[in-house]
Image (cartoon, rainbow over all chains, first blue to last red):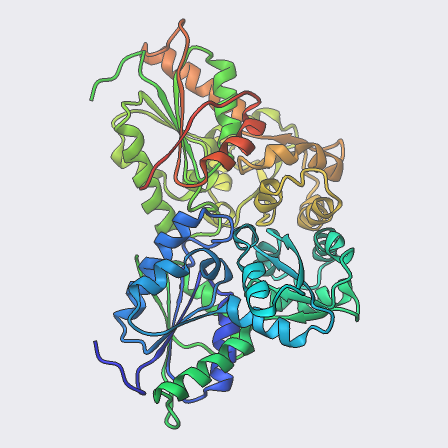
Length: 268
Length: 268
């Protein structure tokens, strides 16, 4: 394989959620080409076993490496939480993921070191955020976490500000609010779309933190360090999915905040 | 392949939902052995494309035929709606499915011939229930349908009587209630678990109809007709899934209303 500054960045997720990360990368690195992969046939990943998620993640990693990417971004908290060893074992190029970036951002934002995490059942069960937060933040960090399995279907349904969504959020978040947190990590790339509603539920004393801009920042720093940044020219953005390309584009353009062009259907 | 009265019945679904059908078959045919397959790695099917659902359905059909089943029961409305040709093309044994059975039951129950259907987006988009109802019931039948994508995640979360579930149900059902229906088909095998809540939302004037007992009745009649019924002896029940066998057993025993024994993990 060849690999120079003109090569694309590979970004992948179980579905459309990772487009919140792709958007941040496009905003921060406007000349970089991107190859995005969304496994829309097998979404959601957050309720699958670690073995199954690792097997699927390895298939996607091979697909993107065959596109000569210079950097891989795991834009799916569930894959980052349970499949990172499977991905890095295959990849000769650097791998950035959302959990490390999200944990660093939360530690930079918190004043009281009392940090909450909401995510899919698989991500929560892995305790990956807790490990990252205590490793990076030391023993003074206190965490509390909650799995929110209904948030992804609610976002996919487009019910971002529905009374039912508010009831679900109140139920999920009530136990966390007892912990006197000052920062809440949105540990799933779908959740930033619920941020306005979640902010109303948790109130002004808790700051919501997602990983998208932190990941983009980390990608910019790493490419500069490696001398692989693309400083000018018009980038190409390619999108690959395993099912329903038209629905992906329709929902995806809402996530991406810009037109998407062609979306190609792939069988893994 | 051999095929006699001692062979099992194959029942399959995208996940646990089809166990409502398995339960009805166990109740109606207590001496029949059953091989159940739930594709828990790739659930939900109701938001996938017809091509993808047909590809997965063919894989499951091959798996069950290799177990020497004497009858196949498609206990998943989405597969019945969009993948039946793919299944019957592969199967040398008879195939029974939930949509035909559900439509017949609804037609037997209705007095006004005004019938509503709630189901997954794929089932609704296929218009399979409308076709079955007008083919079997003639031109006097009026139908109204609504996709309810959040019901499966809510059942999987176990929120069968939660205020949020009630709000979601009210929103989904409101447009149907304008049609002066007397019968509402629960066109997804997860939905019978929501029946008490749905009955309160639609009120006493509308009868809820699911397919489970109709499918079991049809299976009994067909086996008798073919001389393949098993009239005595202790049956064997085997369960196969593609992910999370322990979670399947935990939720599944609630669906099945009895202990389940071993659940085997398979890779398709």
